[in-house]
Length: 124
Image 1 (cartoon, rainbow, N blue to C red):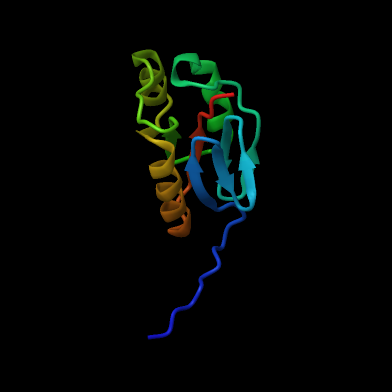
Image 2: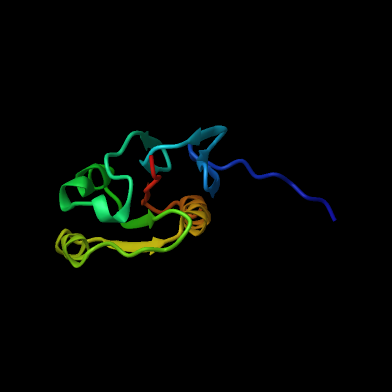
């Protein structure tokens, strides 16, 4: 059997997530960030689910997602009801998962050509 490496047709690939941060391409990011297949927004303000406010979602919305993935660190932690209500009012869905699962899901959806945006909370 021959194996071929497929190069993605997008700029940013999530390579993994762990206690030290999240690896985007070859760069280890140690602060929260927002990622779309062709755009990276570094130094996103919130560092945890508890710090996330509806205003923080503006950086996510500017990337025009059809689906949003929220990576919450080593464990899945859901944001407040106010955050979830804001997401629904603005007309998009948000999946909440631990950062490793969020990285895998982002890559799959980006490979499918979906308008996916991932927001990763990385404790500073």
